Image (cartoon, rainbow, N blue to C red; front, side, top):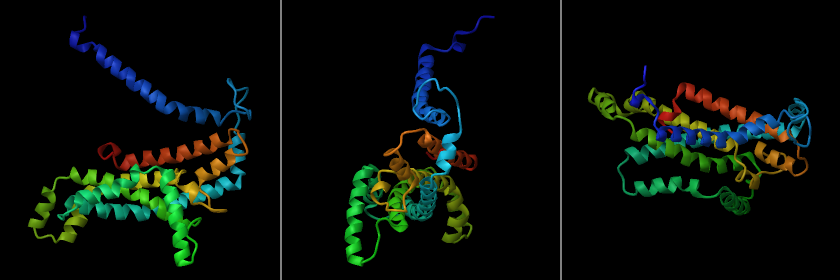
Length: 274
């Protein structure tokens, strides 16, 4: 039986699928190489590897700076998400549902940190912390609180961006129906609005955690002895040694972030928000 002309893939469709496959290959090739390199037995990378081994994972496990960096990164990322997401959610709700002059300017102001390079933001925050320490006579930089405050400045724009997108796609007729049936504003928000906002809030929490957990350019200017994050610990290790230990640490980091995204997408479809 001959296929109909409409059943045959067109040249444009085949070309588009090929370009998409090439794009995915370019994106995931570095990640694949990092994971594969972490199992190489030799210290100096060469292809093909003479043998495979888990020694670099064991080497990373016995490096206390990596464990301390992982603990600090998890602590800072969790606190950043816990502080930045509620603030950003309230700001997004005010921007979308509020009626006051300057909403557009407020939205642009809250999203502005995303356009500032991390090194520039880190340098500015470092100088601000130095002046604040002189004024308040207490340590701010090289502390967990200083890192959390800096990372929160990036968590708020991500939250505003995602929650605003979530709110703009909501149907307000359910809220109006609940209000017409006698529900007070708090009940409408708690029972109707907040559940509908959940995908945007969960996605914002995930992105806030990830951007804090993997942040390097901002963190490396604000950490201190004994209080370094995992990316900074990896950078410090690279100054003295070049071996697959960093690939092993990066593989663990990629696995943690990947599991977080999979679990989040299991409960909240990220494609509806992002």
